[in-house]
Length: 125
Image (cartoon, rainbow, N blue to C red; front, side, top):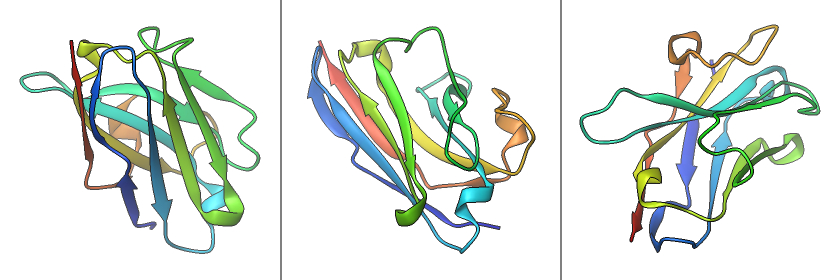
């Protein structure tokens, strides 16, 4: 099990940028696939981006964020990042960091066992 703490959320105008961080506890962080998911009011939680374990060679992005969001990880710091550029009003949501030990990067929320508490991102148009 790994404990996750997100930070970096806030309010930004459309077209702006934010960088989210997710700090993980434990000595086996590099063994986990990591993902960012988000949930807007009244909507289902949706997959945003995932990165595989180890060096993070493999990533998956939701079509809605491709070309705008970038995921990365720093195993020495037990941290995964989400750089969000060209933000849109529809990106407004609570963003969650999640972790799982899987042989692939899953886009299914239920595949992730460990979750952070979430951080609010609000994009004003």
